[in-house]
Length: 360
Ligand code: PEP
Ligand code: MN
Image 1: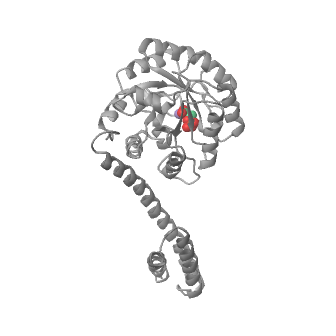
Image 2 (image 1 turned 120 degrees about the vertical axis):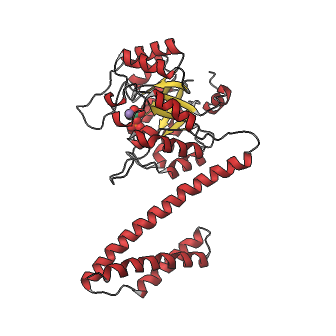
């Protein structure tokens, strides 16, 4: 690969008839395990095999990776199967060893993207490389940190750059291990439209039954591919067991996924689908937010009930309405629309509170 090529150009030249697939275990465990999985992936859609060898674990005392010996196993897997190889790097020593081992794809993990010091150290060590470098989103939902990571790598003259969306940590208990917050990835795509984006459904999901749907949403949002944790005996994996899928499952999944064609006659429909998917994501957020708002309204209802206070407080209501119509104007929303919307929300809140207050 020449240094003036971007990852986008490389993807075009690869001319795959499906999204880019990177697959392989969360962690390299033994030489046999790496080779076994590599051979199972050989006749799948996977172009690249992943395996973590330096594992960032949130708490100490867990398996922390096999270290540099794993590079030898990956090299062997590449030689035997022709798959490209990928691993996570988290400091200069990792980068130097991975480059020496001719690792094709190096990714920066979510716990590293949060630290500009670490990203800068990695960028300096990678300076000018023609290897593919992928930046995962930071653990916390902070677009600026993610953009900053990308900018530091661009500044180090790394052209074969892409990003991985692996979701964001929340304190709240949700069905995902990491909240996808699709809007953040959409915002990143808007800022860097030429930067390929892959989904990491495994770390978003935390459970294998959610992986298919996450991949489908990502493809509907025009993602370029996926990095999926894949293990021959997932339940026995030394790390992230619950979210790994078998190579067989991966093969079936890539057959079942609805893949939008990027070129050809239906360009209008394709553009429309992308835009509709974006609308769907936002609509879902609106409903979630309204649900949360009603939750707070219920709490207020309880409070009013305990203190025997009337539901409707006209002064407060006028205040809310004025503030929102002003904000609406700034967002190109007509006064009439914001008023109707706010009234509808308010009515629903009143109905909620009424129900609470009338319970004895
Ligand atoms: C991984 O890909 O194995 C990993 C540790 O992911 P993340 O940085 O997204 O937590
Ligand atoms: Mn993992």
